[in-house]
Amino acid sequence: MKIAITGADGLLGQRLTTHLATAGHDVRGVDADVDVLDVDSVTELCVGMDRVVHLARSVRQPDAPAAAEDGRLLDTALKGTWNILHAARDAGVRQVVQISDVCIYAGYDEDHILSEDMVPLPDTSAEQQALHLAEGVAHEFAREVPGSVLTLRLGRLVDVTNLPAAAPLDRDWLDVEDAASAIARGLELDSYDHPSHWGLYNVVADTPYR
Image 1 (spheres, one colour):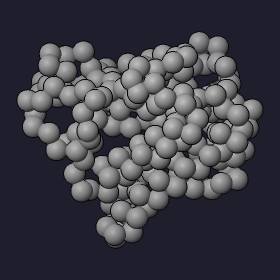
Image 2 (cartoon, rainbow, N blue to C red):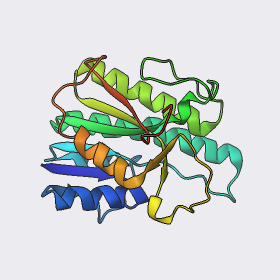
Image 3 (cartoon, rainbow, N blue to C red):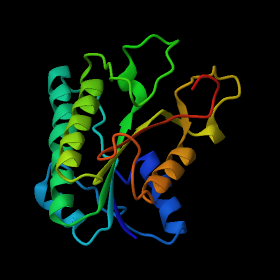
């Protein structure tokens, strides 16, 4: 398959690129820092692709004003996701895999065992609100074109090869290689469980009480 990746220069993007290329796929986006807020760049990225994996996410700049950074995070999540999904739909891309985060369940107590059927309870931070609202954009595109969007909520990414042995267990951990494998598996899906029009899955480590 021909697969485009936004955010391919990040940790997960690099691992996923290697994973997909090893499996024989043609991956686009590796050599280009695609600005998801630039409609022309996004349109060019999607043309001719079979699948698009949307990893791009703003990273807060420590020295920037908080309000400006909040706005940039929200713009990237909302406008960037809309741009990607719109360009992919116009280009005839069969599926977009959107990467989200299980942190949007932050409002639940730690003893809850979470599932995709539970309503997200993000806090009021720009980071979590951006993720939650971007999922809403994906849901609406999937409603118009059923099966066109798969959203994967990932656990907190870690590289187990560099994780200190004494690090306290975090149930939300997800090894970056496992995340890449999960995305690759998602690219092979022809249908989704409920809701069938929009693929929505939580992906965390295989730990007790996950």
